[in-house]
Each structure stands twice: as structure tokens, then as C-alpha cells.
Length: 570
Image (cartoon, rainbow, N blue to C red; front, side, top):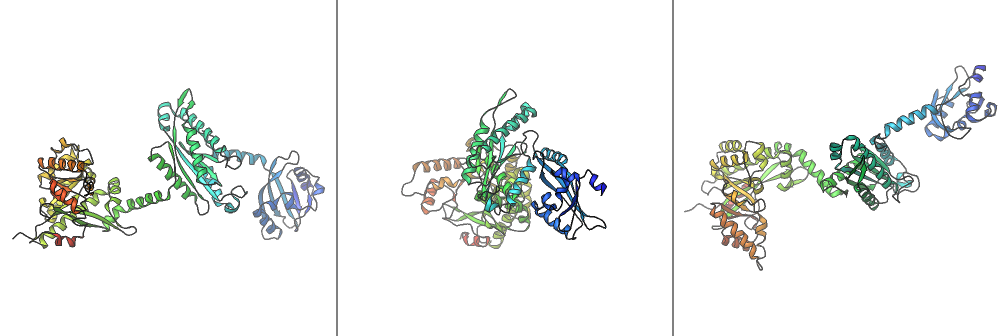
């Protein structure tokens, strides 16, 4: 007992009811009381164990003998000046004794060191703002708080909503590259100061304002807990935009940057950390893509389109191998005789999730990721095989040529000439029954490999047609030197003929001039998007050679094409 009383470590013996049997002077000094006065006091009250639910449950179990030891850290008040005092509390059974030993160690210095280290770990050294780790910790707490919907993050009848501004500086890389990273760091610190001022001046902000964090590089985020709606977030984003765009005086330099800001505001219930951040980052990318120096509000419909596009992109290549693509054929009809001269192969994607997709839904994606080469080769082979089958199955009919669209990337990223030659040999289709369509923007100005490929294909007697003519460069002088056999007028010209009661003479003059020029160059002309008899007649009078559109036929499956072919001449 003498050792107990003389020990520097504050201690007390506690009975099975949790009452102090005896306490040493060290505990009395720690709690600012005489040791004798602590007898019969509740040990839990002395060190505030009831203030922590987990510690309280463990304490009760030790008293009942269901566990041998409790150790926890509690925040007390210093008896002298009331400053915080962190104490490590231990309660354990005494060997061969009836009582429990309570020890209370002052760990304030250690806790202060831990807090300082944590502050360093959780804050950005350049801007002194919370870093990415602390930001995500705070965001997670806000979303996981069980009382969020009823009392808000601050326990004062909050809105149950959350908002986020995710911003990236425009033009910051140029500052780093030209003036160096030290100047760049000082600029980041200046930006951080303005962001903090904007967040703190929001009249709807709680207490000290919103959390501003540097996520890394020149990325920042402003977290708005208990937001009041999109108006609050967009107003904050506008204020941030204005603040960042004001010039900065840094290291004797007057610097100007701007910001692209993604804004998200929604109900906290059902929102995840990853979901909120993904929406904010995506919206910030939209702001960049839309021209920078602006804020953009998250749009679920635009995001759904992006997600669909991403889903299509990831499944495009395997879809070719799984046989999910099919071809339909739209007739190319001679305007002089009304007979089907050829058909254009149009690819469709029978997607297992999104249904039948037209080319405008996936061709652009295929061109971006390079899968257009694999898909284009499949379309070419399938169309040529089908054209040869029509020829052999219906020898009495005049065989139609088949027209296949070719993307410019197919010319650059594959040996198109070799592919065409191999497929023609494989299928047995005569080269004169194949037409390849390339867009005007892909053909005009062609040099090097594309022009060599076009010439080689033309020398094989494969037809070359320029699709959507009139919407690109329209370099007519260059057109005369291209190895092409035909032009397809863009549908925008033909649609100008729809008002038959009040025709626009200018439309007819333009089309007539283009047709006349093409004929002088020895080229045929096909009019796309012909939808009425009046359009067809006017185009025939002007001199168009063939027409294509719903007036003649919608795209049809391969099995329906023989019924459209002209009967053989007597």
C-alpha cells in the first residue's frame, strides 16, 4: 500500500460497484482534489467514461468480470486553468484481489505531438489547405453521419443536402513551365487564399464556412455541407470564378489564370463518396471541354449519354467477334430509268442492352478508339460476299454494285488496298461491282498514303465516291486530280427542295452548278435524302444520275434486295 500511495502514476482501487475504495496522491493532484475526498466517488464519473458509449460498455463488462481490462483515452479538464487534458485510462483486475486497479496517465504531450503530426499529414504544405486525405475523410463523415437527414452535419436542423465545387486552374502549367515551380507554388497559395475567402463569405455557410481543399496539382475542391440548393452552389462557383480571374501579383510578376469548375448539388441520402466525386470530376471535364473559364452544373442526362458512350466503347471490339453487327441495304436508283443500279451497305449494331443502334451512335466511337479498322473490314467482307451471292442466285437480273463507307482511319491504320484485293479474291466479286465512299473532308487535300491508296483502288477498277459532298473543303480544283468516279450530294442540298409550293431558286442554281461541274469532270452524281416525288423530279431535271432516300426505299435486309432489282432486258 505504501508503494501505491507513493507512486507517481495516478491510481485508485475500485470495487465491483465502480466506487473508489482508495486513491493515491497522484490521482488527487491530477483531478485537483485531495485523495481522501475521492473515496466512494464513481470512478466512471472521475474520468468521464460515460461520455463514450464504447468505453462505457467495456467498463461495465470489466466490473462484471466479463473482460479483464479496459484501456481508452479520455479528454478531461486541467484542474488549474481548465485547459484540455488528455488521459489514458486503464482499468484491470488485481491478481488475487477483490478490487480493480484504475490508472490514469496524462498523455497530453503525446497527444499534442500526434495532433501536430496529423495536421502535417492532413494539410498541403504549399497552400496550408486540407489535403486530399482530409477532404475525403470529411466528405465520408458528412455522408455517413446517421443523423444527417434530420439534424444536418452540425446538429442544427440541416437540409440533408450536400454540394461540391471541383475546380481545375486553366493556364497554370504555362506558369510552371515559364516561371518555374517556386513561382507556381506561390500562385497556388494565392489562389488558396481567395478560395478560402469565397467559401467563408457565403451567407449560407455554417460557422467557419465551407471546407476548401487542395486535391493535388492545380485541383481544388470546396465542400458545402447542408447546402440549400443549386442556386447556392452556382452562386459560389460564380464568385470563385470571378475571384480566380482577377490578376495575381506574385514574385514581381502579374499573372492571370482562370478556372474550370464542376458543380454538383444533391440529396446526401443515397449519395456515395465515389459517386459524388465522379460526378464532380466529370462535370469539371465538361467545363474544360466547353471552353474553360466557366462553371458547369452536373447534368444527369448528359452523364447518362457519356456512360452509354463509354459502355459502347468498351464493348465495340468484342461485339464484332460475337457477331452483333448486321447490314441493311438502301437502293441507289437511276433517275432516268427508275431502276436500282446499286445499294449502299449500312451497318447496324444489335446491342444486347441498348437494342438496334444506327451508325451515328457508334461509328464516331469506333473511329476514335481504332476499332473502325476491324469493323470496317467486317462490313467490307460481308457486303462483298452478299453482292456476289445476289449475282449467283439471280443470274437473270442485272447485278447491283454495292457501296461501302470507308473511314479515313482505315486508310491510315490498315492496308486498305490489300484488304480490298484479298476480299474481292475471296468472295469472287468483280471490282467494278464495289464502290467505296469516303467523306469529302477525308479526301480533299489527301496526299501521301491516302492518295496512293485511292489511285491503287481506282486502277483495280473499284469505284471511288465522295460522300456528303458540299459540306467540307469543296476544293474543286483539287477534285479534278482525284481518282474518283462519283459524288454524293449532301442531304442538306436536297432538303432545300422540300417546299415544292415555294421553291428557293438559289438551291436549284447551286445544285445545278455542282451537277454540271461533276459531269464535265466525268463524274456521276447521287442525291441523298430524296423523300418526295417533287424532289425526285426536280433533281432528275437538273441532271442527277442516281437518287437515294425514303422516296425510293428505306434500308432493307439483304433478302429483300432481289425483289427491287430490275428485270433483264429482252
